[in-house]
Amino acid sequence: MITIEFSVNDKTYVLEVDPRERLLDVLRNRLGLMGTKEGCGEGECGACTVILDGKTVNSCLILAGQVHNSVITTIEGVGNRQSPHPVQKAFVEVGAVQCGFCTPGMVLSAKNLLDKNPHPSDEEIGVALSGNLCRCTGYDKILRAVKLAAEEGKQ
Amino acid sequence: MKKRGIGLGCAWYGTGYGNGFPDVSSAFVEIHDDGSATVLTGAVDVGQGSSSIFAQIAAEELGLRAEDICVNTADTDVTPDSGTTAATRQTYNTGNAVLKAVRQAKSRLLTFAAREFSCPTPEGIELKAGYIGVKGDPSRRMILGYMVFKARLNGERFISAESSTARSTPVDLTSGQGAPYWPYSFGCQAAEVEVDTETGKVKVLKVIAVHDVGKALNPTQVEGQIAGGVTQGIGYALLEELELQKGMIKNPAFSSYLIPTALDVPKIEAYFVEEAEESGPYGAKGLGEPAMLPTVAAVINAIDDAVGVRITALPATPEKILQALAEKKEELG
Image 1 (tube, chains in turn purple, brown):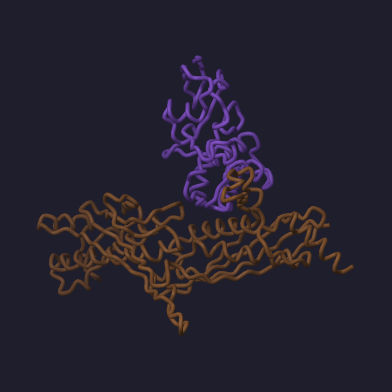
Image 2: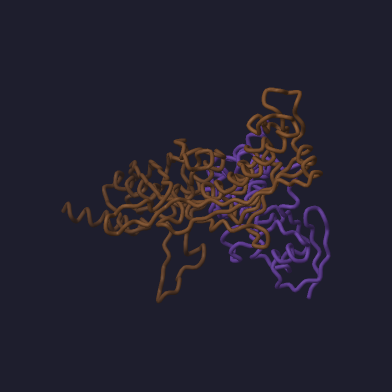
């Protein structure tokens, strides 16, 4: 067991972990942050996306030992019902959520894109979301929502 | 060289289990004294939005808002069976069961309210914007929940149970007659593709999809379901191949069984035709599976239009297209 210190959604945690534990399991089972979903468990689908030190990562591929001194944002740290993040607002407005399983990962990928590149091209939006698989929506409304969030950001 | 082509695909699809197989959906409804209502049904919402549709149906009948309706689904402890979320059947089949159940509970509420308002007939009572009252007489109305509360004090509750069975019959194998499915859903799509003749790679640039949905109970969901179907159709046409060896799946991962990503989707324009299906709830019928069917034909036809080769086994991978192009070149000598 090792001791790690890291920040999740602006809150600092010090935990005793087995360094082989997946970040996904630390977030869900130890911190109770169930918004991060496990899809394939092998880094292909993006359902478990979180933002780690400014980069989107598949939390199923990150080991607990790797996140010492890191800053992590999960979906719980991105807006809430009372004050949704502009990306979340756009998802609701456009109707970009169907079954919802990919949504947390999609929102985090989109948020991280807009944080770094507030005026992305269609191609850049596509690339930013290409690691997040969705089987319901055909991506159409998701891409429209991210575009809308970017446009709202301009004003 | 990159060559462009346009193709058309059409589909018709019988929704529901069909062939006389018992296709039954059930629903329980209660109108509450807080001005809300509960719908209980076994129908599973897997993301297509059936729970929203049932809330909308109940709200429409009761003059409430969709958010006033609590839809409990897929709990075998409390919900009645509504069959599977399959066969493009929940909006039509379970939608009909919900509509019948709401109308049954509502009819008893109207009868009670007619007595309360001294109105000679329940036909004279209307439910509107959260109120119940006598048609055309604004002085005789009250909040819906209050009327239900009065009924409860009288020992009456507005609880209903209904079911709906789709009408289909097996086909008579001698005469070929029968109604194996009811209703049928129709759709037509056009695809524009770009084929790279050097790599065999196909990019779908645009898909225009038009579907007959009877009545779009939730237009946003209709558009979403069409776009989802188109994208699955593109996967079916170009990417998805389940490789089997001695009954084992050789590619059970997203890295080897490819499904479309955000970079594979074209510009999708979704349109719907509303030709009311008389037996459906408010004229609605299913859309789910039909949305992906025409895409495959449209894409394959567009490839033919672009480079003049006919792909007859899916998916149309770059390898297959290059091979077909080579064979065509050989034929032409």
